[in-house]
Length: 270
Image (cartoon, rainbow, N blue to C red; front, side):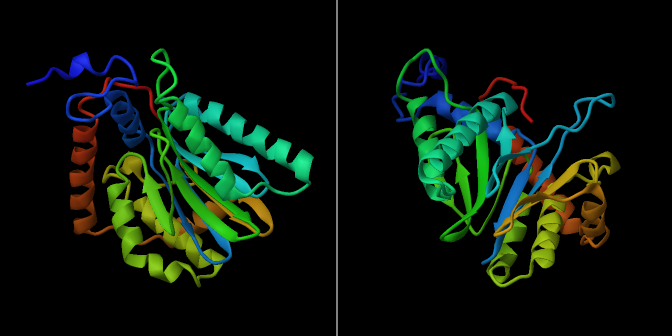
């Protein structure tokens, strides 16, 4: 009945069905990105991400960015947009420390990022939404936090969450086990993170998890820490073996990701 192309030229125009297609395209960019997941206990937050190398000559691109000693982000989507948001978050943390001489509240910073993202959907027809989703992991005076932010400006707090391509399998795994996370020791929490990330890999050997393409980060009362390749390998060695059901779910997830991105133009997502 309606041609969608009449309503996707800017981020201000609503379609007759009540949709803003530019925002939906930005959400599709997140779904095409490399997967990243997070889970938290009562003492710490763990982020696990898959790093992508665009050619055999290139290094693997990091998907976790340190913001402050008590805060970091995992990204899925356009890395360039993530750099803009990460610089904004670092400046806000620095300004807060300069004025108040204390760490910035994780929830307050996430709310400001949500407001900044929402402005891109409202202020000007010449701008577009940020095509990146963030998992924000941090510890403040209220304890550990794990937030997800969306290009639409929405944000949510989770016990565990996975975003990016082929993340449905990881979310299903986390939903089965998240009730255990609260009281787990840190090594056990990191093992669950690696096992969940393994659900996002395809059956091809080239896509399997290795210490080169897997990043594991911890934020607790002692601050931000990224595990070395040797430490990551120790968790990969104890990783759960995938079952035939896992492989079938990956195939279904990969098809779903392709369908969700069908209305968007190809993007350089990572």
